[in-house]
Image (cartoon, chains in turn orange, red):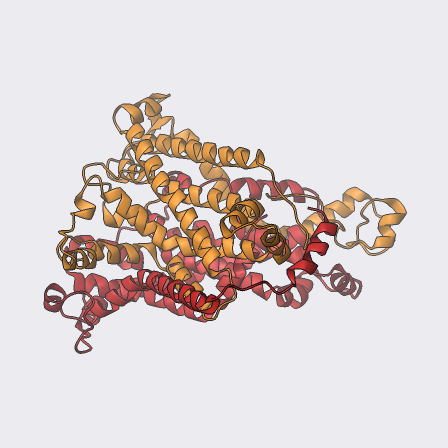
Length: 331
Length: 297
């Protein structure tokens, strides 16, 4: 996916110069200065310093250091009031014994399972629908993408109302056709599917855009050839479209799975983890343990657990897609 | 599939296909079903917004007594005046604008600088530093919340505006990666010519690279703005006074504290969503096009 290679031509280098000595000359000192490489390297570094420093400070201070601090905190007792003390592996044991870590992992996996397959299938289906030359499809595309930018907290407030058992539009529509609507978010079995549905609604159009772009990049001749060979629309989809959007599929799945494991905003407004602890996903549990129970060491241990689960799933998906044949095509 | 078979079949594809009788009628029926299905889907996507707009302009009594899909009979504005004047939404809106503005400007400027150095400058340690940036892409946001809180606490920055945007203002690795890819595609000859003419790196960036990179800069701005405006978990943790709340926090607390006061909380949702809706209306073409830029292959 992400390919890191040296630029074909490094900055400040002309083709002729590269041919002459095979080494990138340094232009900072001017042509033919013949300065020592170490000194010119230093000079180049100093020129780059003001460009790199702000983002480097940000990356180190707010991404690298936090990961280190996270691991340290996970081995400490800290309640914000008294200084932290060493806890050894106790936090990692306690999160399973007292904080329902296993339950939260299960609930989180359940949410991801409700969310990802359906969302991906719907996004792909919508992309196939819109991937044709017909009038007004651009308008529908815009409408499907609109929820993606909408503030999740504000949308959750709206859905909370829409799924309200007495006043909500969903049960009002159901009662019109003679069905007494369920309690939705107050029901331990329905709360999580509702939350998943809300998030699918929010992000399916965004994912559709990726699939649509990938489908549009497939050369039309492949479909024409398949049609002549007598392949129907379903065969064309499974034998041509699907294999050729493999890399997009991987990208969409990896980013969506990572996002789903961190779901918080919608749940905070819709269920607060309830009813009971039916929707207590890991990220919500981390928040509760840290900022309602003030046990930051255990919250850090839970965060490490979440990190490990996300990493395992990301690596798993890469391995799964690596073992599948990737087809290359050139237009 | 070899190119030869492809081209020979292309010829066959141009032959007129035999069309069965009633072809047009079937096609018209299919098209009608297709568009009906799309329109039904459009209702699912637009419905919540329409219902919310209706409810936000109704007094609470009508929200309780009328079906949600009845439009308001008159433009009742008291929900909004209450939210703004009594519930603190003026302050929330101003806070959100301030924090999101600072976050967006910082993130775009500093990401541009970093991306330029990685894409267009040669200096020792460049690739190592870039690898560190890429590795941090694998750190999920949620995982850094607890340690970031500890760091902000140590720095005595909790419950300040700084705390809300500081972790995101110095540039984002993902944005830097996107911009670097874009900057690398700019013709080397133009930059070489500028260097020969004695342009400084700053001048090359400002006069050549930035004007040629508008699409990716707009994309970076949108990413930062949407992130800042919608951010919830982080401001929830680092602020605990009404004066500092951003819209998402104000709205969430308001919703929990004023149970079933739908007129106020739905008007609050409209206030929170409206600026985003404007951004979407203005940039929708760009947002849809920028997907091809943001996809890492």
